[in-house]
Length: 180
Image (cartoon, rainbow, N blue to C red; front, side, top):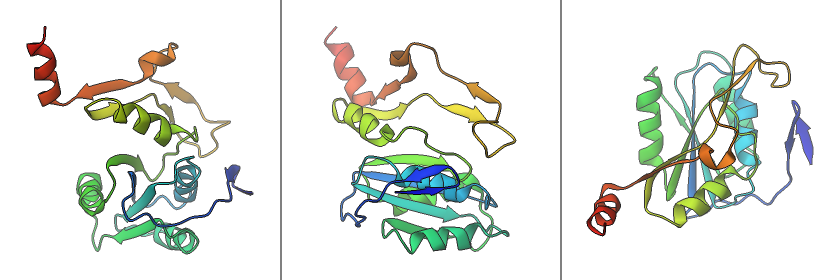
């Protein structure tokens, strides 16, 4: 195992899946100080049916070169380099249409995933129902890349079960309503 900027990177056999279950789409614009941390937090998931798509939205710092260095060691990473700044909506859209995964996780280039079981937990829940969207708890930090010293704002309740919001597809919802 390696420790990069305080984040553990677990040694694992990395291989590209022809049909990944999860596509992690990372949008990045001028986030050279945080992009490695973001990618490592995705790589550290305990979920291996994964592709990682990083969209560099015309960064004018070292974001792209950092992503390229990390991608040399991880064949699951696909880089899309916008030739002009297109914004987050367009960049995410490009990521979605380029993805092969059954499920899509969207992550900003300055965010990180704290728990290593997020993908496995959420896909397990999604597999049990007919959900279009699953959202879950998050922690917001501002003005610091050091999570231990940053002010942290939580948008979730203390009861863990209320941290997931599940949206059923319209088809499934109308089915349920017709049975009641």
